[in-house]
Length: 218
Image (cartoon, rainbow, N blue to C red; front, top):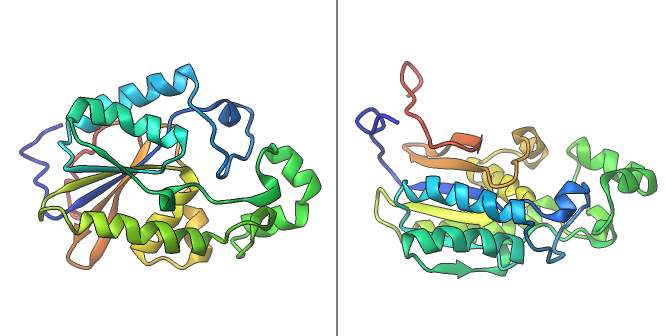
């Protein structure tokens, strides 16, 4: 990365999904179930932490679930920064869907699953609405970023669904459009930058360091 070309102004939020779990491999809905990382998940976290450490973050916050907290620890050990854990950054509670594979959910709760994929407000498995997840997670992120200097970087180790809803809320998107952001691969991240008109999505589902935007749209 050309550091001279990438002149950063404003704060930056790095929203980092946890490493791989056994339930990820099974395509099993995790929700708030506390599943640990696999050996591959730990290796993913270590690799990603080496990259994110080079961004010189100012603070790290994380979900208190094992898969996110263990991911955050890898960055903490490299940077010397403490991790602040907050249960408000947990994944969406999905009630009876938790522990089921996506195929099992589609078979047993087809109407509810289809409505969710259409972007309708659905309490998956009798759990939380996506807007309720944003209601609890986004204020935590904003509270921590506001404590940082004007060019500070906050790393948030959390979960795919929680990250998507938080991005949607911070960008001011209508909830029905949040699904269009797409998912995050294990240990990949999205970057929001502070601009003149609010937060901007600079990177999404990235596994490499941010590159400068050169041209008419910078």
